[in-house]
Length: 288
Image 1 (cartoon, helix red, strand yellow):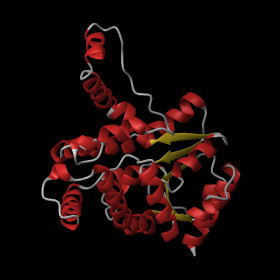
Image 2 (spheres, one colour; image 1 turned 180 degrees about the vertical axis):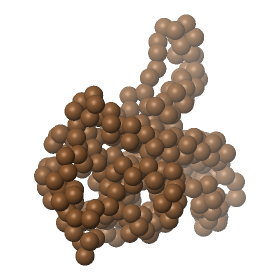
Image 3 (cartoon, one colour; image 1 turned 90 degrees about the vertical axis):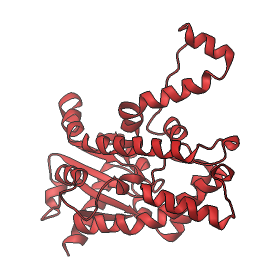
């Protein structure tokens, strides 16, 4: 959804925007703020963790609980139940299910199991993104929202062909929303890595990239066996590698079909009106 004039967005009776960029760059903060300005907030990660991967997440909780005899007996007799309390701001249930490959004594998963869960996430993310038009209609029909923001995960760029306007997800999002890239600086990237180490987020790697970086990490650290890899060490190292690999593809998607705002400019936005002004400036800049 590209505009011929700024007014096409500013004066539109309905607005729909999909924000994308690296995990932690400010997409969810913006979406939460817009929610307070009467925008409907659609979280792709929340949709993944509830609609498409909720059963797998809860089954994993139960699998762990069954290792404790006291809890196992209560589960077998239906005396207790286990559920996921995933929220827009707390994606830990999804993060813990996806996990990190490496030493099982340090909480790591076997590489093959990690790859299986990655594939589950890939399928779930595609479906969650294709749900956006349905939720745009639903938000207005049920709740009266005329403004809509789709808050995507950092891995959006991994499950699409950003150079193909006929890619099913790209076509869906570009046909129903304005695509907005929140672009950070090198300094922002360093801060994202630091924050990831403190609070890991759900991560998805393209299959060949995962294998490439897995083997590279083992080579750098002189590791022979997969179960000798420190999962926390690989997780942080892999996140940084992913960040730098994704940045040019985010930019290419914005160049082809969307708009760009700087993360530093977005950080000053306080409400929906100021966000519309920022979008207007980005649209005007692209038109020039």
